[in-house]
Length: 140
Image (cartoon, rainbow, N blue to C red; front, side, top):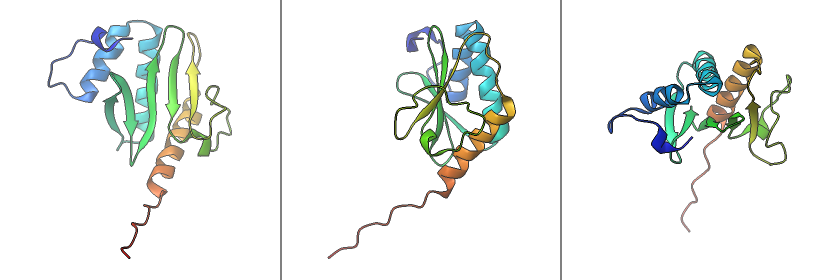
């Protein structure tokens, strides 16, 4: 999905851009992105929607929770600090080799384990909000 494929007014909010992206997809990918977006909002009513990197939906709360990328064969939800999250339901199925991120690739026909997904989002928010700010160096 190219940024230019989504038509929105110049002053559109990130949420309006994401709405337009979902509509522009017009297939299972749009439906999947809309479903996980709804689950993210249910899991964290204070989530902030953003658009970064030329058109990628981003959900944040005290830092990035996850991004929502769409490709021909998958909708990829990349959790910024996924490697630090417990995943007892085994949702992470992509980007498993890294030290920081983890992702969930949804393919056409995949069902979302809604409760496990919301638990993962809540765990990411907890991790973001519990991170202690770094101490500023003191002058010599």
